[in-house]
Image (cartoon, rainbow, N blue to C red; front, side, top):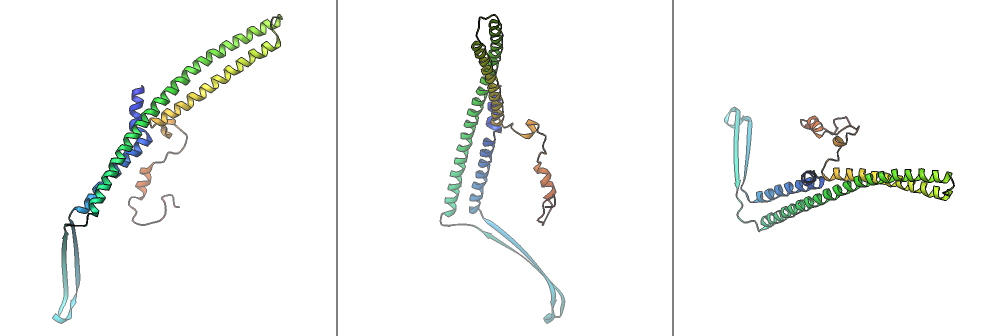
Length: 222
């Protein structure tokens, strides 16, 4: 189970996903920079229709298509510098991705250990509460026959209160560790937690506005 959680954390953690998108963006930036060295072909077309009284032509149509091919030969080195810079940025983003994967792995292992420790602490404090309850009952019975003082009863009650506080603290630690582990493996989401809220669907908004040529209003009319 721990190995599966580590694998999910290294692929689905929000920080890892963000770093992976950074690598994709940097890769595209390298291609854009390299595009400055490629030939550029421009084609333009023009159509004119009218009359020419000088030649007694009532209808005249002129059409032209012009193509222009630009081949870069020497550009001063700025483009080469931009390519090298974008490649260095890509290498930096890849290192950032590896770093985030290592951090995600460490977070999963740490959260897993805290969760296991909290579970063990709950079991231990549960036994401690039961023992404190039995001890308090014994002290009360001894106090009835005069073998214990009121102070002894109060001390036993305090031990029981401390044990109950300890089990509540352990339960709190288990809940916090559970959510921390869910966040580390990328499962801390509305769907995973089954929250009673409206889930935002980006595809629905995209389908509503993808064919809109102009307009300033949102799909809800604002």
